[in-house]
Length: 263
Image 1 (cartoon, rainbow, N blue to C red):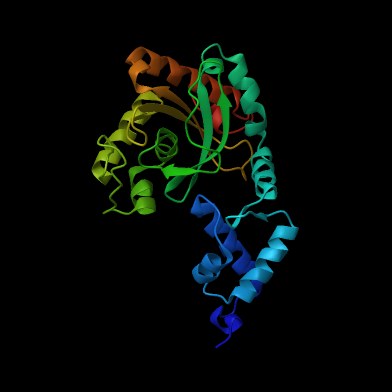
Image 2 (tube, rainbow, N blue to C red):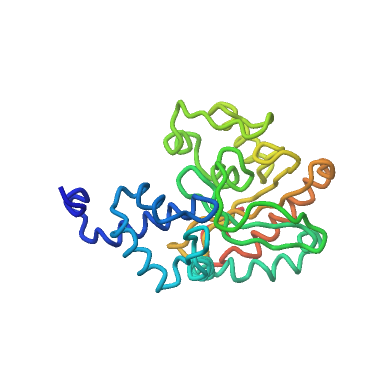
């Protein structure tokens, strides 16, 4: 059976394989050789080499001494995706105009399945030089941005999305691993108006986040989050960051949207 037959009724097998190859490189964390890529794709090296040549010509991947890695064009496309949304274009200005946020590490994320996917970050003058790299993911159940987005749903919707019997990875000794624990954290987030990640996704880092409705009906809901060193994250600072994020979200909300008319 040839490769196309194995692809079934895929209308564009070469495109599908190229997408898979890009995904493999994104997940690899480093260069992958032609032999490794061919093995992962289940293709002959000659077929894989042709895919690599086409993707390399388009700037989507690049060849190094160690193998292939993602190319600069993928970063350009990621930036173009984020720039489609009015709120991300305005995000940096809003952070700089806030007396609190202009010194903090502030990030923007959206919900992608069960993960929080990070799209943009503002490096404040006194902020951490770490946090979540752009394009990376964290479990929504554990991250402050993910919880801020989940808190906009009902408990039934969260359960349907993640599964009634879902368990979550113990990334740190503080991580919530059960659905009941997550639902309790979401109830608290709804009461406070901001979500908290108390060293559950990163040891030594406390996250605070709020939801942000999409500007247009077709835009995805977003979340704004601040990362604070745990040693500096007393409740007063957490509350101050949470309130500043709420103000930023209000400034970034379409004044003609239903969200802006909520009491």
